Length: 111
Image (cartoon, rainbow, N blue to C red; front, side):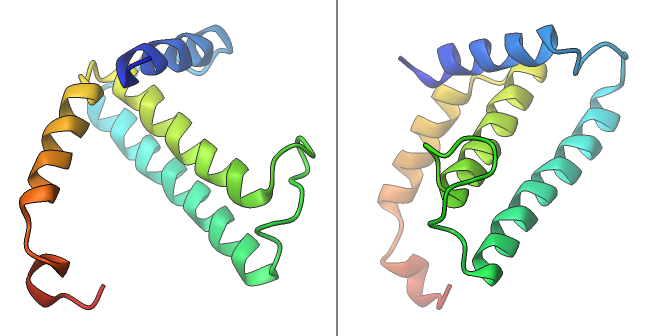
């Protein structure tokens, strides 16, 4: 499965569950998307701070908190790509090729 197939399935689910019932501009959507991604990253950070990354998450014991939050970040991102009609499969492949051509640690960066 390529990323666009997964993007479409995730976006369809979000639409079916009512996350797109209210029309909004792309700018308003991107603002909401960034806030939601920030929230997911913050939840990951808080699980790390609590020392509970590898403990079962509260939604499904088959997932750890780490797995759940990483999945949420990807799901929200791919859903947004569906909303914005981004060919994310193409974009990731191009960006990956750029990263492969970069210097070691991008020329000596620490992080």
